[in-house]
Amino acid sequence: MAHVLAKLTGAPLAAVRQQLEHDAAEHAEQGMYLEHLWQNADKPEEVLFLFQVKDLAHCQQRMREVHAQALAKNPDTPLPEMTFLDGS
Image (cartoon, rainbow, N blue to C red; front, side, top):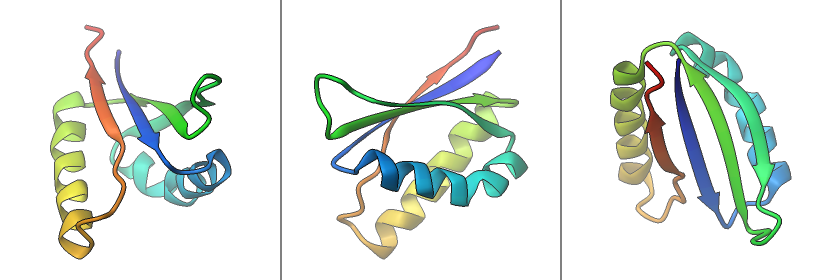
């Protein structure tokens, strides 16, 4: 089972939660399902979230596209650091 662990710095937990809820249908269309959302107890400005993904290669490509589009619109857009985990 594949997963993606994302770490975002500088965004409040409530804002990240709201954005993930807003994007849930689009994520599901891409085979990404949010499993967990955490705030780092030692670094409150850091939020981590975990997706289970159906197709890791597709997810990697899609994240590259989405992040490139976001940066093209605004080069200062805070993007999460993504770690792609293959459990097969």
